[in-house]
Length: 175
Image (cartoon, rainbow, N blue to C red):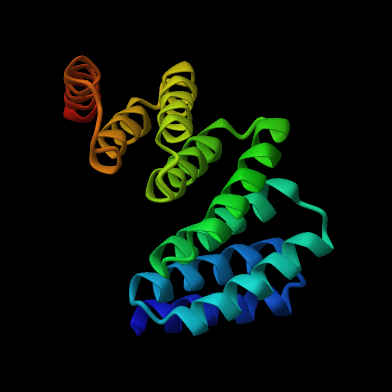
């Protein structure tokens, strides 16, 4: 509750300062906190408002980041088809805008939605793309997270792929 109150206070000041992008990011953060608290209806309302604000100033990267949070919310609600579509769209926008760190997170969430929909080959490909993108930009912790999520979400990995993903995750997450 304290976190939400502080975010709402920050949002109030950004509103006074006429800064819609910071307002959108704060609303996205509140939506994410509410999602983690499993207060899904409230989270959804914050995310819709955040997306509206980011869309007003045409910041495609922030819209995609908010859509990634929406995809996480939809995954948590078990609305996997919607989550997959939202995450796929966000990933497409982030590829075009060049925001590779954000792309890695979105690809991981897209992979989760695909895996839970039973589309395991697509999920493996998506997790591998997340690993490659993260590795290219030196975000080894993100690459490790993608490898670990691959292990967690896909239960029929070959022994070789499982061992390779485990070794990569272990190496990349150690530091």
